[in-house]
Image 1 (cartoon, rainbow, N blue to C red):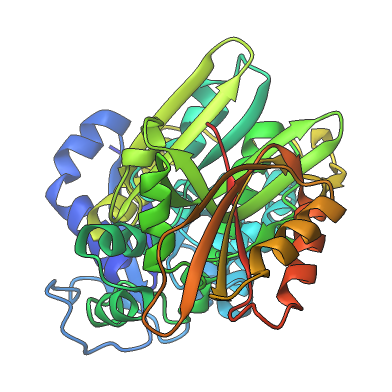
Image 2 (tube, rainbow, N blue to C red):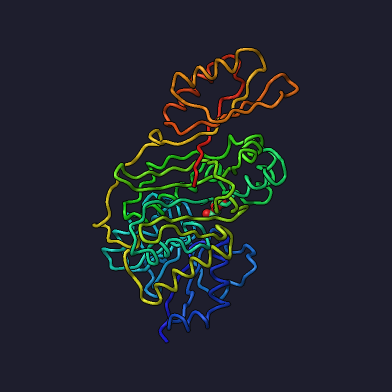
Length: 429
Ligand code: HSE
């Protein structure tokens, strides 16, 4: 049986998981692929760190770029991370030296996916990145293969497990954002740069990849609108619940005659929506298409086992000899879609205001909404805080993003308004 020789760059959580699966399931994988997967070399920043696995049987490389030049390596697995630097160099050199390439690196694919796929195509080599989106959910393969008969119109989901965990925990424990953030840090759930999670950037990377696979458009991360969860307070989660909603950080992408819409932001979703009950570290993706109507996928979005499972599935795919285009259509067939701006969104909004409890405040607020032609559907104000301030919660009828933002700018300038007003988009999914 001819073996497939692989080199693994990066031995963090995912790299260790990949080695464990390949060792534990080696006979099963060989039976499924007709090839033995042989790890010939590994590399990481620290050779001696205790990882709970024995790596002494594999060659060690101090410089991962050596993998791209080795004659005894057929495939390079990149688990280093980062959109540029050594991860990108390794990708470029591996592909141009005829090594197939598997990565879990969402930032790399979101920023350079088209260019790398072009290189893979030019060299007639396979490139795969299933683990870059939604961990253990095989969403890239589902879209690119299982749904290939459909014109897909919309793809959206919970693409970041850390922030989903935080929002779930705020609701479950009644603790506010700051306290849950500290607990999440201690659990080690945040990316090395927490902004990637908290500001929606990680979800943005994944959304750009998903949209590209779903719609056959070139990955356009620069035009993803991203807003994270830093401004969500417990009071928002509580009022949302009272109004029949839950708050989720969603990535939403759709392709229409208007162009490609790509946005990541907190949303109020109806409690009854399937996505509303996806909690903690779980991810979920919904894909709408013309012949399937709607499909829904849920699973663990991160962690050793689920992410390594996706990486090994890619290795198996290539071992089976499947080497079509990385984004399922040749780069020459991919469109450059016109971006749709967030300011063109239409829909209802949840608005939270924190104001002084005094006469005339509501009149000033509603005047600003009237001036922008924003019509209210619901308004809530319950008693007042002990410090003489009060939260005013409003739900608008369907309206235009620009009008809401203009009204909030006006409201923000009122002397009776304490915190910057917050608007959360309502998505009646
Ligand atoms: N920070 C990411 C998340 C890790 O929380 O989903 C998996 O990509």
